[in-house]
Image (tube, rainbow, N blue to C red; front, side):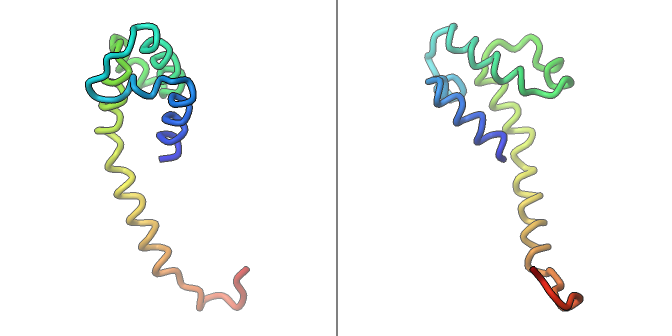
Length: 94
């Protein structure tokens, strides 16, 4: 989640945020700059998987589709754990 936000902030600061939006009409130079950033931060296995992709919007959407469900799963478990935290087992909590 933080990685997505950091990537969006960085791309926005470089005026490259439009390169990952659907239906973008950005120039190839801007797409290449966004690709350099995205590929640099990908895991080695994902770099190999997306080796031939030259559009940052395609990589962004594929990664979002693959990993967006984790936010729902992890967040709901953390909320459940927080709600059912057993403080009665401890004398003091700081």
